Image 1 (cartoon, rainbow, N blue to C red):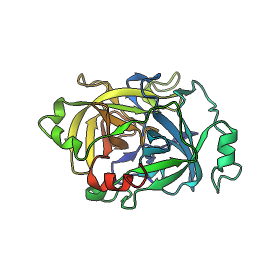
Image 2 (tube, rainbow, N blue to C red):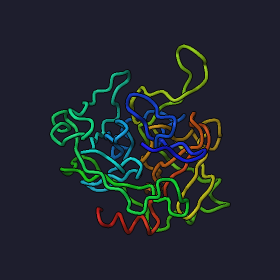
Image 3 (tube, helix red, strand yellow):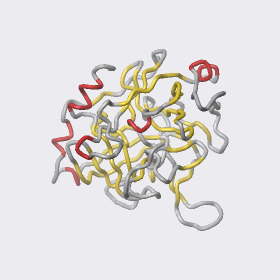
Length: 281
């Protein structure tokens, strides 16, 4: 999985460890276990040429999940999907390995293991973190079979976030959800807080607004900020940002490898994204 340029750190997480050199999307810092608060937020697992990775995604129709483009581009084979809130408290994870990692998962391997299978699609104008004016870090997973028993989340109306521009943004909090790494002190060794791959669970928190551009929403992910509970970290990539019950953005990037600063989120209520999503939802 490709890394962010310069200071940006993508929030994707390799299942066997954290891709700190720049793996798209991170895990929730601060916050708490989600339980069943957001049952339509799932974990996706997939192979790319450089390994197996996990991200987060949200069901927006019985057959479609929205996520980040860096969680879909270059996917080999099918994508595994689960909506289990608790995956594993301790290693190892229960996920199967592909018989041929160079080809990725087959639908049969995924369904035999008891999970959902889908196909990844990437926004055709995704810039791979090279053009802030045309970021378009959004993708979808189209499931082979529709999901039952889970109510899909609702996408925000067009340009919904415009009403929260400064000076309103700094006093507005957003809900973020994902399966990313928890930041805490390790049990042994240097006692510096760092992302931990386990427990592998769905978590949520709140983050205050910091900046809004035509493509990007930035939030303050510092858990010591009294205005919110924390932010996102490795593995949260593609996970939802909610405001008033609407999905307004998906987790895209962070600025540090300990996930305690600003987080960047791709807006999904802008026309260039919504027009593309209309082909799927």
